Image 1: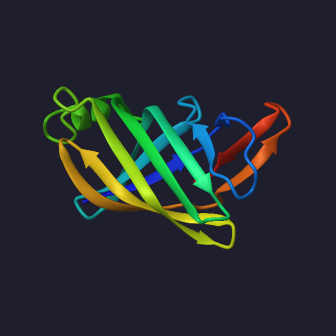
Image 2: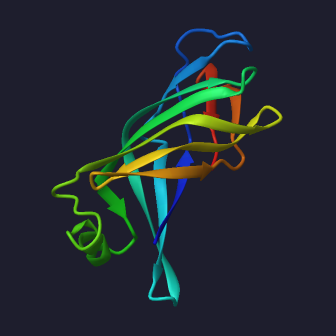
Length: 156
């Protein structure tokens, strides 16, 4: 069984200035966004790895408690920390990267605790099959970046 975690540090670009009651749209920054996975290793330990993102977008309306997350992952970017294992999990035995170079998560139901996103409910398309997935959002926050001079969002 594969357990997916996501870290989408959305060093994102706001598409215009949005009021609190409006939807803010962000473009995912692939240099700051990756998806992590965990899978059991014969009941003894946990193998971990991460994938880079190709592209994605986030729409967020905190006041209405709505939003969408759409992320495409580059399956060839897998990094387990071990080159031999990287090649193995890219093979047909696992993620079959030659035939399925990308995967996609799309979620259009967000859960909130106050004004903080706590989960994104959607679907993960992996190796040509689509599955329901709930991604837990930890420490998700949006703020005005003093360096970038715009609002960005991030979290685990």
